[in-house]
Amino acid sequence: MLKLSVNHKRAISTTLTMLDELLVCIEKWVNGHQYQSILYEEKNDLSPSQRKALKKQLCVLRDYLYKIKEDLEIEKTRQSAINDIWSRVNAFRENIMELEAKHMKKYGQLSQETQEYMNGIATKLLFELDRILEIIKM
Image (cartoon, rainbow, N blue to C red; front, side, top):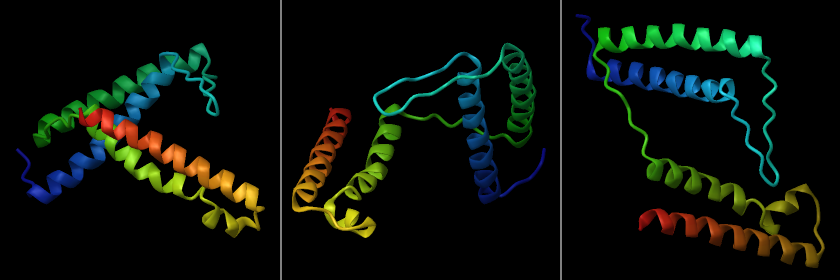
């Protein structure tokens, strides 16, 4: 068995977990994943031959990850939906705050009407994001 310190193991585990997350994202595309929303749309333009080749490559990488996991005795990380939502919403709040007029002025002057509109948008979006946080606390 290979000997690693706790810190080495943590660093390796973090990197390989992020790689595994990347493989999950690629697998979604390979399986036809394609979201469409109001301002965001995904275009899954993978050809059938690309999908087939990617599936094969995902298997190769996962086999390798499994071997490394066993060799180094790395434990699986479980991602909680609640923790993921909480961290993403909290991190994104700052982006919404950047819509406030005082921050938008760095791109040029805004009329009073536009300032009020932008402040209203930011306030409403932050309120609705906070509602998501309240829901996951239930």
